[in-house]
Image (tube, rainbow, N blue to C red; front, side):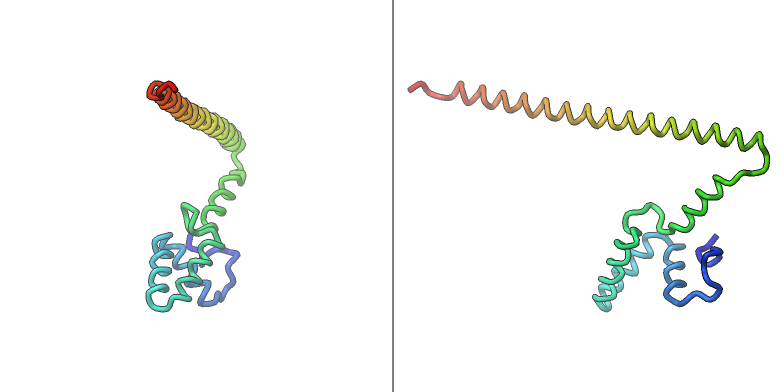
Length: 140
């Protein structure tokens, strides 16, 4: 589904909207190429594209098209009409959410352990340096 076939799009979109939809369909690389070309040919265009990409959060999304990801999430939540499948889907989504939370907790513990190991290494190194300085100090 392209952005132009989205029901929220007006029947006759303007040329700016069509360009935006085309760049969204091509991906983040097309946005970056357009920005670089804008800087090369006329720097205010490149600057405007950069500002727009940051403002619309296109620089930081994995997918440039928010409409596609929003639509796919919404269609996954619609009931199918088959109660057995809907129950299975609800159970599976709940299980996946639990697994995601467990995985995020695991990553937090892993980062905490890494931070603690780095801090302990820093403190050991500092203690060794202080011990070496005490050994090198001459009595007065």
